[in-house]
Every structure is written in structure tokens, then in C-alpha cells.
Image (cartoon, rainbow, N blue to C red; front, top):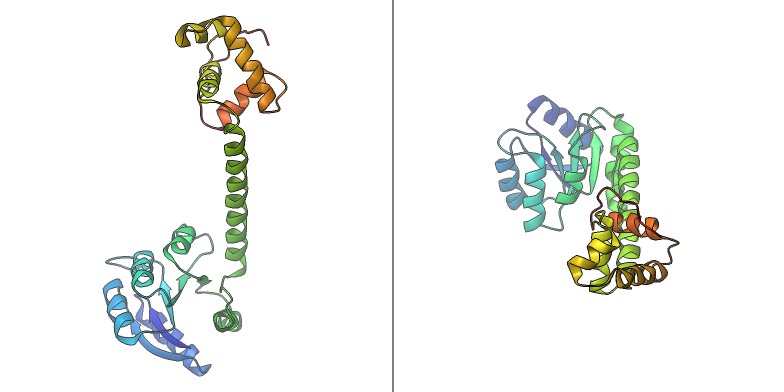
Length: 224
């Protein structure tokens, strides 16, 4: 494993270099800024870059994004001082494959880093849980969006417009006036909407409309 170290603190860089070399990890170079990191990435073509999240003159996240764009095969592991780091998900979106705490035990740090050789993503335990929870949340959102899209496809554009107006608080009569329908026609369509969406009543239809972003206003009294 050929490693490039990037951090703006010389003392930390030296300590990390010595730790890695003592454990038979090849440190091919060190950089103390984003520009230097970009230059040495091109010159040295490392397998792994240990990248400080925050540096002057451009942060580690921007450096990671630029390096991954040019050298997608390079693995970038972010280094941070806190597991509550606000840049966690930005770094992962930028292409980082791992996120390690600077203050974690040496043995654990090395084990997680060496795990890259077997395709593992090195994440400090507390950070790993945050990532898993976030991915689970995103998966739930995707599943919900898919369900909503499927249900919305059951309605015609006219019915969606009727639902939007009703959800905004208009009475059936007011909706009819806007769409040049009779009140009875609007009521008929609302019945069709609730039936197609497998809902029980108008209130549930309004809740669905709000969920998909059609907008909801103050509900007026209306016969179901």
C-alpha cells in the first residue's frame, strides 16, 4: 500500500509517517495544502491518500473531489478530530471511502486502514453508525418516493389538479368554478381519487397531497 499523507500540521504528519513506516506501510510523500496534495497525487500516484478534512487555502473535501475526478482509482480516507464532524457526508459524496479519527487508538487505526486491502471501508465506530443510519434514511426516502410515484401515476392530470386545489382548502364549488366543472363533477372525481389511491376519505386524500408536495392550506368544512 503506497500512501500519501495530507495535513497542515507538520508534527502530526511526522508522527503519522513514523507510525505507518513502523508497520511496514509505504509512505510515498507528504503534503500540507490542497495544491500540494493535487501536485503530489499526480507525481506519486499513491494507492491511498490520508486527507485532513480542514486545511487552509482549500479544504480536504475539495481536494478529494478533484483528485477522485482525475484519479478515480485512488482511495481517499479522511482524517478528522471529531466524530461529530459536520463534513462527514460531504466527504463521502466527494468520493472519500473512509473517515477516521485522529485521536483513535493506534492499533485500531492501523487495522481499519489495512482493511482497505480487502475492500473494506475504514470508518471509526461512531462515524460508521452515523453513515449506516444516514444510508438507511436515504433508502427509506427512496422507497417512499417510489411508492408515491406509483400512486401518483394512477391519477390523471385533471385529478391531480383537483386534488391540489382541494388540498389548498378550496371547497368543491370553488374548485368547480376554477376548472369549469359542476360541484357534482368535482365530488365524483374526489371519489375516484380516493378509490384509486386506496384511501378511505377526503382527509386522507389531502394528507397524501401534502406528502407529495401539492400544497395544503387551511381545510374548510366540506362534505366527504
